[in-house]
Length: 50
Image (tube, rainbow, N blue to C red; front, side, top):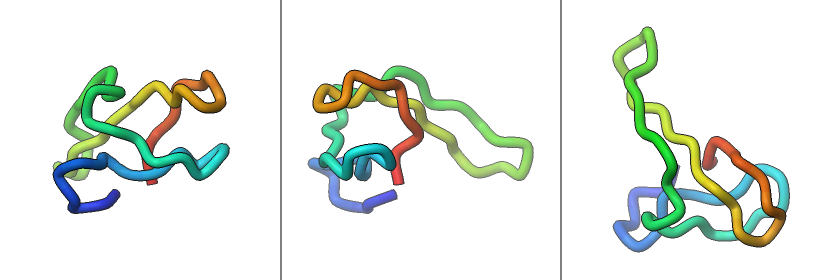
């Protein structure tokens, strides 16, 4: 994921930039890292930002 505060990363499907407001859920992975699911408005999919 991108460390820029105006972005939570890019959509793995279409490459669009994902804004913090598109985040649907944030959770802790089994290895202790934070996982995120977000809604991509460009391709209308729920994705894990890259």
